[in-house]
Amino acid sequence: MRLRHKIIVLAVLPMVAAVLAIALLVGLQSRELARLEAALLEDSMLAAKRTELRHYVQMAQTAIQHIYENSDKEGALDDALAREEVKRILSSMAFGDDGYFFAYDRSGTNLVHPRQPDLVGQNLWEVRDPQGVAVIQRLIEISRAGGGFLRYIWNRPSTGQPADKLSYVIELKRWGWMIGTGIYLDDVALGTQKIKAQASANITATMLGLALVAVVATLAVFAGGLALNVSEHRIADQQLKLLAQRLVSSQEEERARVSRELHDGLSQLLVSTKYRFELAQERLQEGRDHAGQAIDEGLAGLTEALGEIRRISHDLRPSLLDNLGLPAALEQLAEDFGRRTGIAVHTAIGPAPLVPPGSATTALFRIAQEALTNVERHAQAQQVDIILDSTEGNLRLSIRDDGVGINASANEARTQRKGIGLRNMRERVEHHGGTLTVSAADNGGTVLVARLPLVSAQEGGKA
Image 1 (tube, one colour):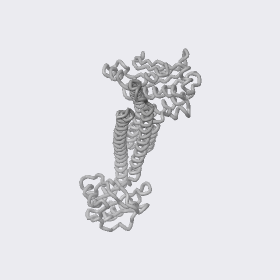
Image 2: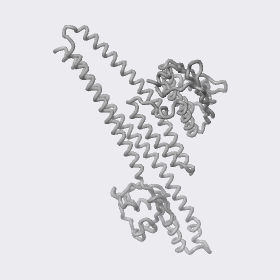
Image 3: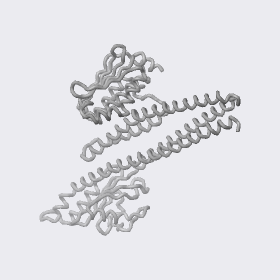
Image 4: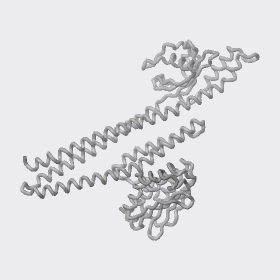
């Protein structure tokens, strides 16, 4: 077998096989991640809608309670009049474009349906949705069992088209009525479809990138094989060893870069999004306002996380740094952190030379993100101080908290020393010729100080 053929067999084929295996693994992992994200989003949105439906039904109960409970008492409305008054009240209550209350008796006869009045008086006991669910029968069974939820397909009044719907019902036992309301789930389906579509696009882009790498590498190896002289076996072997070493080194460097980006960028976004959804859940459970705002912020966080995934392959800097610069970016980061966690954050941006956005400012910004995440997870702090200034030719970022401190728990300290977060921060600083120190503060908290030479920071901004 000729040398170039051996090179093709020994180098190109294993490399192509490895690329194909990597592509398969990435595709499978990406699809699984998209499935989990879609399931998480659907579960969160359905939980919020269940809480919302309970709230609506409780409002309806409150509106009719005085009539229902007093209808059999002396001096109250006649029972028939009381029932008509309750029907009128339920018919008048509405929310959104397609939000209304309905009522049925135990035989399945519709008593209240303000959006489809032609159904009033009809017996719908045998009505089934396109999936074969006996809707009215199931709703009556659920109400008689103490109340609960049912998901089914029902014609949307505003469009007349079948749509996925979630309803919550209860029973007025003395009258034998089932009353309830429902919410159409178009937004849930739309959210999960967006996640799946984006995941499919990301998988396609990744596959194309891997295919391009495979083609370029194959051509390079093939061209090198053609250029080799059969009599120079020893030189060829040495070159192949160097190539293999460079390939391994490049793979390790790329893995380290992707690891830093995933941990310091995407992880922070997902943690922030998680807490926003938890905040929305807490507000909904407590009946507080602005839950929708927290959900919107959470969805915005997911959108930003998806954008971060797309940007990892292009090694872009945070847009906040490009638009506002490091001082303003740190101010915004502190404001968002304080608003989300309730921890007081004080910033002191001292006089410092103007440093253009670049890899150095990105490193400091990522360090601040990671440090605040550690404070939120481990420190149990009430206050955080962020200081950015210049001293002795260095750009200095100092983050101090009044929490439990790094020596409060030997196990926790040992975990932090071994954690990937601190190692990533140290690698970022040392890459620019700087230093990172973490120590216990006088007040029992923790102080993190990152120093970068101004010359390195300014050159990094111009790069």
